[in-house]
Image (cartoon, rainbow, N blue to C red; front, side, top):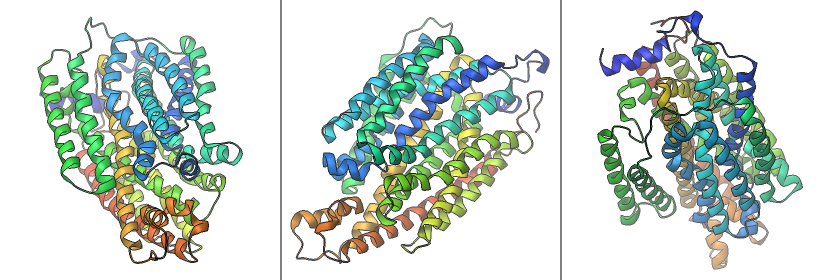
Length: 526
């Protein structure tokens, strides 16, 4: 049996070599443990999107540049992506519960640091520290689910609930941010982490099992350094392109990152106990699932930022009302995340994913027709709800495919890969789609900025809608409405990009995952 056959066997049968009657069935403690793991999972999702609605208030307080604003938004996600592989392997070796508790404590401290930031640079640093701490939590929660649920159907449902909680946190970020902004200052949004972490530290020793590999090995710090040397230059390059378009320095930075990525891969192939087991990629379903998670989250992450800005800066809603309008998409995502694993017990997972992504395409096509009329709010909420159906499905089933393919001792490493591509996808989506929308905005506004405006006002209006909105009282009549129209045109362009990319993903899922059988604890249904 070759490598591909072995991995396909693992994915399709899910421990079929163990008789169904001998597979331990999870009891009350395991399900309570899953509920406890949902707390940091929701918290991590919240921190990815918590500042979307708070950006105008934050901008007025800290006065960040447009580049600093982008770093504030996604430094968290990029740092998580940079450290996840290292932390996933570290958890396999020192203990997954131990790493979870250490990371949770660090997360609470960094949250307090972010809450009381007094400058844009301080907040960027705090968000980066939150990302490093968050990187310890994500693979630990997923790997612990693997330990707690031996039955394949229960494990698939556990992964579905986990993915739903993470995506729910992402969806609730604007809602929670809106509620808190209605009554407190923007920094209060970060302080909700403190009581959540306190409860986790109290109950984790009681409800969660400890697990570490039996290998007596040390962490390869050269691999850690290479992984960071690959990620950080690419992050810098993407940021610079988002601000100043293509140029020698950003393109060169990305090229440097790619060189280190090649060196990282080569070193992993040479090590007996690598930081990242490259043999996992020999499985077609494993690799396709990662692609679906990465590019699916690119579309959703960027669109979410634009949706929250549309509701607040174009529709004119308060942060609280704008957050509440994000409720229907959140509900759609929850339904998809919970029901997708159940449907996949009767319909092949590849077809379930393809169907859900097809509905997402319909949603993105609706967003390409968005305008500034009174019906715009219903269009944006309905379209984004359909987009979220696809998110819930690929997050649940994609995670199960990725983590379920790995041997138990590599569960942390596989979990890290799943989370790396998801977080990187969200952050790339913010950078790529945000940059595309901003470029279209600036192009549309070139001929509409009066020469009579002062230099600072011209810079603000030409930079972005949120910058223009911060000085709306100083602008001549009609100019802010022109800026809103330009923003919506940029939104339309980003939606076209998302519709095309998600169409390709739906076809890829239907074709490349069609060989996988339904999720069944007793046999493979090919």
